[in-house]
Amino acid sequence: MIVVIADIINSKSLLNRVQVQESLQQILNQINETFEEYLASKFTITLGDEFQGVLNHSNNLLHILDKITFPLLPVRFRFGIGIGALTTKLDPSICIGSDGPAFWKAREAIEYVHRNNDYGRANIHLSVEEPDDSVNLINQILKLTALQVSGWRDSQINVYKVILEEEIVDPEEINHQRIAEKLDILTSSLTRRFESSGIKRYMSACREVELALEKINKRYA
Image 1 (cartoon, rainbow, N blue to C red):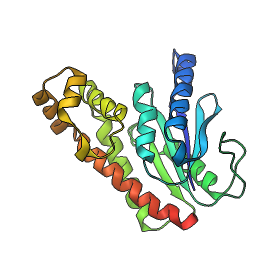
Image 2 (image 1 turned 135 degrees about the horizontal axis):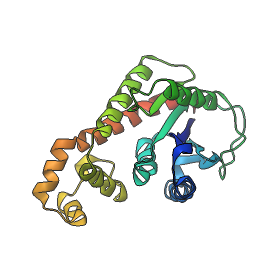
Image 3 (image 1 turned 90 degrees about the horizontal axis):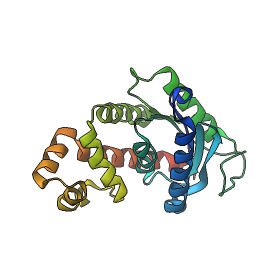
Image 4 (image 1 turned 180 degrees about the horizontal axis):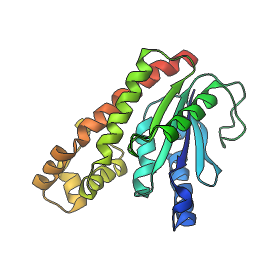
């Protein structure tokens, strides 16, 4: 199983903390409904600024995390991903009270991010019950993609927000004309934003990470 534990970075310093918490709950409700088939236990807020969920497999995992984070920018999140076995039964409707190595590893991963955030740019880490050589490679890719996103300008972020809204996970399926129309810009301007941001390369990297995660996850199926 794949467990995700997340929290809001510097949540106590937010002036609109209550509003952010309410918006987060609405987004998690949408995620739980849209991606119900992927979830073994729905994303649940466990503390005021922390939430967790369990996924059956890694398909769309990073896409889901982006759909949580991008609508709430400039608020930022940490994510700990743990893969391993479970020692208790899961409640599909709420992710509270479950336990096992997958949860322990997710907690270990998010604590790692607390200690090693790469000057505030790294916000996600993977920890596995029985790690192999692929785990370090995946974590390096996650760091690089986080670094890439940290350099995006608002205009580039807006492009990716539309891609998320359109539920596009394959960069080959991006329709430039449709996205340009939604952003009310010329297709030539959109092309420049793609070229300068590397959004398509980011999406491809995320898909490769998800495939690698699933190979690990199958060991605990």
